[in-house]
Length: 304
Image (cartoon, rainbow, N blue to C red):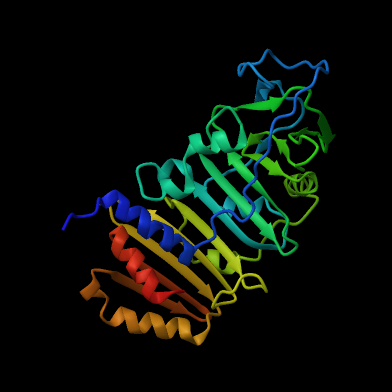
């Protein structure tokens, strides 16, 4: 019998693994260019068609300046009420099975027509199904449609990236903000200290170590998020030896969560998986580590 290519197997496992363990992006934003003959003060186009490439330094007003190295940093910029949020380090996906699902900096560039690679991505969603994203663009430049209008707000320039159909706006900086105009304005409100940032996940995040993660996620149980706990945090890391470790932290987990963990931990070594479980009050923290395939199999067994 011909043995399956390991890369093919990894992609198969990955697709199911992610379906069981995480949200990818509930509100992936796509938009198209808009071109017209309006006069503008932007430099000549580098793309040759309906975009012009503008360095951030040539965009008037304040630019976003905030640490952006983990989901914690993203939540600090998010208005209160986040029901789920995701953070992906696209540099760390490269060369891993996760690259086929998350993409990399170049695929983000194409998806958002930025003209520059995105290295880190954060998205936040709310109960009313609204949301926004934050993108790290190290090259500090951006493609904007010809004739783009900029709306001044709190000293920032909110760039219109809509063609009359999509409500998509940008504020540049480190990181850049992208989303519907009201959501972008709400993020600016947090940055300027006029609104309260999200603190809903402080309790579980106090037990997390997000540094070095490929992805991180937080979720609150709502009518549309059926999870076996009041909240959970999850991350995935690739270790130096090529193995992976997944950490899940549950706030007020349902009894079945701890029961399943205990059952599968008892004989985990037979499946080549290492468990590390700690419980403190109403929080359960589970770390499982192994090669990617075994980690996928263990997540399927746990189904939590």
